[in-house]
Image: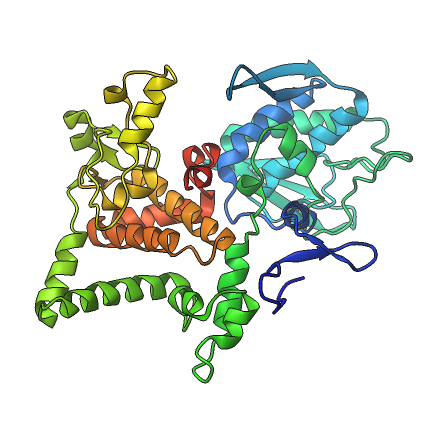
Length: 435
């Protein structure tokens, strides 16, 4: 539930069995998206993982991936192949096969598929034709490289004594074991257990449901010209000026960009500049040296985790941001972590305000950067009245809009939309670096 108007109350909360308000746990939303098969639009980048895991499961083996604490703050991740018992074999086979097929077909297209399969091939893919349990005809297609996996699945299904209906995907429904059966043709059963065993983050297969999505939707639905955001600010538990700056009157992201540009222009006018001079100054301030990826390699610059090229030595505009690099480097030296003069800058949230930083007009690097911006914006949801985070995210977006070519930016946005956060940004938990 959401929407308490009590000042300081949680925006999102859960109710226990006695209808008492309890702390909201976003893992419930993860279970929800898995339960209703709410997947990303394109999960084909995981196909090779599902195919390899399927071939292992057909041999009654599977991956065992563990993460254990080591010395200090380090962790050791181990990956082994281990034998599995009969029930887990059946569960793993049908799960990996179903996820592989769902990467390229709607679940309804292969629901109730019976063997044998009749294959027809083109240059790039294989289409399998079959009869369904209700007597109708059906088909599904996969890229040609996964033909061995489908052949192995069919051979395995044919040999199972319990598979009296000769189903291609005989989902387990044994008595005494938690039910795992396919009841609804239009969506897969929850695959979250196998997803976890394959060490695939939730947002890579199932859709992440974050508070930012709910906040933006609520802001759009509740705003009106009559109250100028009063109702929306109450629902989102924001101060009115924070709501108006972040969410009011349309798309939150576009509002932020417009508001930031306007304030920058007005502030220069207040200092004595004409309107034309102020606009020119703002555009000049957004200009950033932009390099291609090849130019970065020639210059031997380091590209940090959010796709910005630099030498690790900050030169931050003190009027716009803070520079804590020197004190942090000295502290690191005292801890025996290296020479203070050689410790690279860690202030990834200040790259937008640093004169040493250079933009990189490359799809993968821009993908990293807009992933980092997304993490910043999600962090804002946890601290909605921290205007410094909002300013940082907005300024980053302005720099991207002004300095990156349209083709590169569009392709990077597509990668973010279809693939989720860049793996480097996601794995390093960039949000934790913003203090």
